[in-house]
Image 1: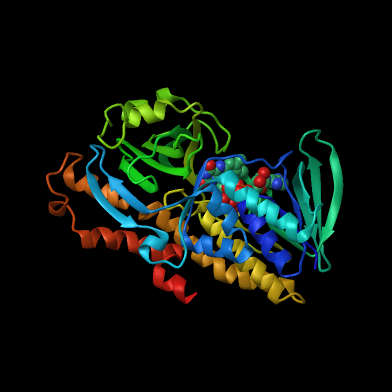
Image 2: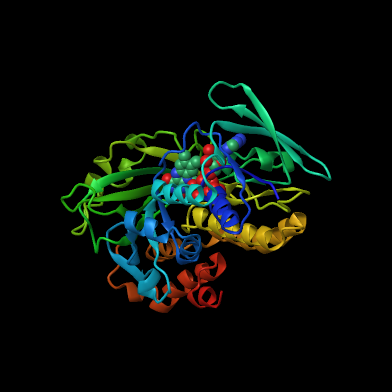
Length: 414
Ligand SMILES: Cc1cc2nc3c(=O)[nH]c(=O)nc-3n(C[C@H](O)[C@H](O)[C@H](O)COP(=O)(O)OP(=O)(O)OC[C@H]3O[C@@H](n4cnc5c(N)ncnc54)[C@H](O)[C@@H]3O)c2cc1C
C-alpha cells in the first residue's frame, strides 16, 4: 500500500511513525523548505503521551520538556482559585508534559527516519491538488521556493495532514463557510525566567474580558543558572481581528500590556516577565465548524486540517496525535482494504473531535475562571469557598477530561 501524507507536522509525523512501525512506509510531503524546531509551547496530556510511548519517542520528549506537576487557576488579583494535580501526580499511568513544539516535532521526525530510513520526507513540496479514481490517487506539487512545478506522485491513499490552511480540506469542502472568530485575540511568547510556584505548573490567570494569561515552563535550566524557558499566551476579548491565522505573525506589546500592568503578585511579577520577552507572536482564536465528513474515496483529513479548534483545552496537538494513532492502526490492520480503514478511522475520530471542538467553544477548562469572574463581579474575594465549592470546580474540570478523552478511568481502560 502506498500512502501519501501531506504535512510533516505533529499529526502527519505521528501517523507516519505508526504506519512505519506497522510495516507500511508512507511518503510524507511538506511545503516548508526545511523542517525546523519552530513554534512555542504545547501541553501534552496523558492520552497523547500514551501514543508517544507506543511510538518510542517518550524518553526523547521527557528529557527535553517539563513534567507538569499541577494545573492552577488564579483571578487577576493573584488570588488562588483552584489547583489540581496533573499526569502521574493525579494518578495517571503516564505523565503530562509541557514541551516546546520543536522538542515534540524533532523526536517524531528522528523516529520516523530511524524506522523508515532517509528519503521518505520531502520538503519544499507544496501540494496544489490531486485527482483520484478506482485505482489510485495522483498528487500534484509545486516547489515552495522557486514556484516550479514538481513531478506528480501516484499512491493508493492520500492523507491531508496539512494544518489550518489545508488544501485537501478545501478540495473536499469547496463551499465551506469562513473560519469562526471567537472574539478573542491571542499574543504568545517565550522567555527565560526563574522558576515560579513549583517550577512545573500550568498556570491560568484572569479572564478574557479583562485579560487572561496562561503560562508554563517548557524547558528546564536553559542557561546553567537554573532558569527555565517559560511559554506564555495572552488572551483578550477583541471585537475584530486584523489578519488571518498565521503561526509566524509577529505581534506588539502595545496591544495587550495594558491588561497586565497591575499583576504584580508576591509569587510572580507578570508585567516584568512579559516585557522581558524578545519576540511576541499574534494569533486570532479561530476555529471552523465541524465537518460532516472527512473522507471521500481514497482521501481523508487528519489533525488541524480535519478539526481546527480553539486552543483552550491543550488539545490541538493531542487530538492530531490521537488521529494519527487511530488512522495508523486502522490502515495497518486492514492492509488489503485501505478504503474500509479510512471509514473505520472517520467513524472513530470525527464524532470524538467534533465534541472537543464544540466543547472548546462552550465549556473548556478555563470556564472555571469565567465562573469566578461572573460570580464575584470581577472583584477580589474573601474566601473562595463562598464563591464556588471545590466540588463544583473539580466537576467543571473533570467534565472536559471526559469529552477530550483523558479522563483517568477511561484512559486506563483503553
Ligand atoms: C510553524 C508552526 C508553528 C506552530 N506553533 C504552535 C505553537 O506554538 N503552539 C501550538 O499549540 N500549536 C502550534 N502549531 C500548531 C500545532 O502544531 C497544531 O495545532 C497541532 O499540533 C496539530 O498538528 P497538525 O499536524 O494537524 O498541524 P501542523 O503541526 O500545523 O502541521 C501541518 C503541516 O502541514 C504543512 N503544510 C501546510 N500546507 C501544506 C501544503 N499545501 N502542502 C504540503 N504541506 C503543507 C505545514 O508546513 C506543516 O508542517 C504550529 C504549527 C506550525 C506549522
